[in-house]
Image (cartoon, rainbow, N blue to C red):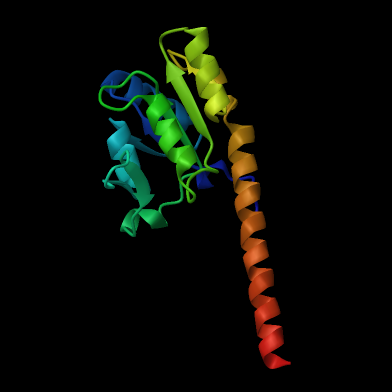
Length: 173
C-alpha cells in the first residue's frame, strides 16, 4: 500500500463559523484531502460513532456505538476551540478518552492567542494549535501527523494479519 497519494487522507473539520469552516475545507481540498465538515463538537462525535451514555451517579461519558459511522476512516480532526455547547478542548478530551479514537491526531485552531489555552490543549494531546485565519502553510504542517497516523494504521493491520496466520497455522498443525 503506497502512502504517497494524499487523497487517501480523510480530515474531519469542526467549526461553528460557516466562513471559517468553508475556508479550512477549501484549504484542505486544495491539498487533495478528503474533507468532512460539521458545525459542532456533538455532530463530530456523532459522525465518529460516539454517543453520550448517561450513567447513574457518574458524569456522562462517551462510548463507541455500533453505527455506520464506525466504518468511516478519519485520519485527522481539526477543530475550532471556541464553539457553543462543546469547546474544541472538550472534543479533544472526549476523543483522547475513547479507546477506538484516541490515536487520531487532533489539531485545534482559534482566533484567540491565549498561551494557557494553547498549552492546555497541547498537554491534553493536541498535535498542533493554529491561529486563525488558517493558512496553506498551516495545512502543510498536517502532513507529518497524517503520515504518522497512516503508518501506525498499516502496522496494526500487519499485526492482525500475523496473528490470524499464527492461529491458522496452529489449527492446521
